Image (cartoon, rainbow, N blue to C red; front, top):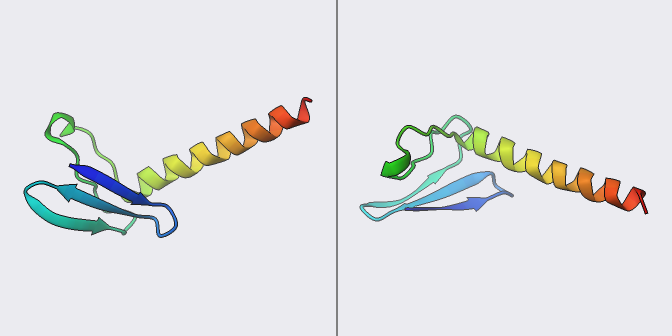
Length: 69
């Protein structure tokens, strides 16, 4: 199983060995997870919220590092 994450469209393509490729682009859509993580719950909205926050944090860290020099 694998995900292809499209940040521009805020969509996720899910590839599972036993099913056709599925596209998740609704914010509240529950993303599929592997069997070992079946108790893990993640929506499209949660994923992109986390990814966007990480990008902001990296940008802030880079900007602050430049300001110190």
